[in-house]
Length: 281
Ligand SMILES: Nc1ncnc2c1ncn2[C@@H]1O[C@H](COP(=O)(O)OP(=O)(O)OP(=O)(O)O)[C@@H](O)[C@H]1O
Ligand SMILES: [Mg+2]
Image (cartoon, rainbow, N blue to C red):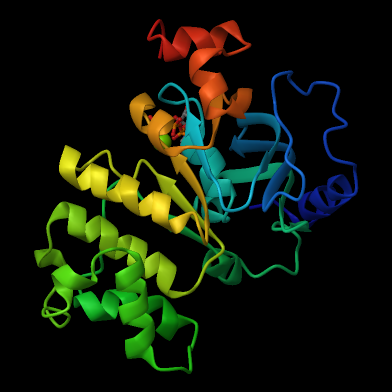
């Protein structure tokens, strides 16, 4: 995502800077030991427009972390930076670093395809490929030239996504014939099949009815035994139900980040309080 090679060098230089040394660091931001992902003074631009402002945050392992905030506050931009999905937007570029297990994802030698294998993504609108149920789940394995038994991996991923029983007799049918909730679990199975460490979910349930949403939330609870999940949601009840930690963003800044209970019952920042009580956003 860096604009030029020299920008990539700048990123590397900043990578050497000790974390959280920035004097502009907002207060009310928790820091986890041994985070799976950590941003260091991360800023993201679309062309000349600075959209994410110097965010330093840590994401704990095998927990669910929610990003909340008003529309346009930069939640999608930030979550996409965690697996280099902004790379596909030509005008997007960044400064600072995103560390995954301590390694800068934006270092020049890093392969974005491998990044996306380790850090999978599920989008707001289920986006199965116009292929069979089976081929959707096998897709990433084929791309990564997986050499084991595909059928076992496909079944395992569908089971972990709580979809196997509903599709085991229609594996050869088109994925487009599944219900919206089933399609979203299929997309989760597709992400799980390549054995990622982290799953990013950008409003994964906003297009689903309450029952399908409940299934996705249950599934997230099961998945966090083995995976780190970061979810963007507009639904504050959903954040309160599923997330261990919640980050509140506004105007591209990380305003407050704490245990979910704290954010929803006793936030430190008046902007967080205003947002969660529905006074703005
Ligand atoms: N591809 C893009 N090109 C230019 N500007 C963009 C692009 N994507 C997002 N932006 C701008 O960046 C800002 C943050 O957008 P982003 O989509 O990250 O917000 P969000 O918090 O996810 O909002 P929402 O809740 O509506 O999904 C907005 O001002 C948006 O217009
Ligand atoms: Mg968004």
